[in-house]
Image (cartoon, rainbow, N blue to C red):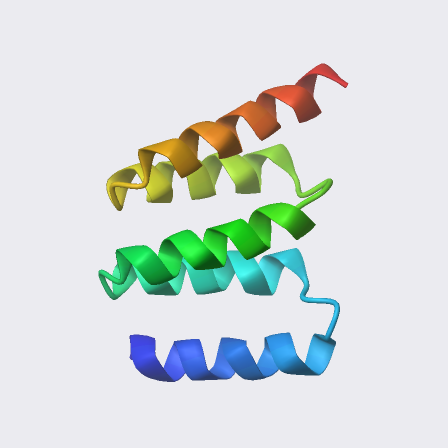
Length: 88
């Protein structure tokens, strides 16, 4: 139930205040699964600002989901972050 999942992750986001990257990434995926492209784009922008040292594998997986959802620019941005993490 994607609407319920979104509601629960929004609550988690509010509780954590610092907006944990994992919670924000989940919101991106939920929006994409619900075919809410513009919401996914907004969710991704917030996630990307806080993703920091998120594991490259998790970021690559999100890039794949972004591509499937038609958010090519965001997927490229995420893959560039993976490459930067791998080279450091």
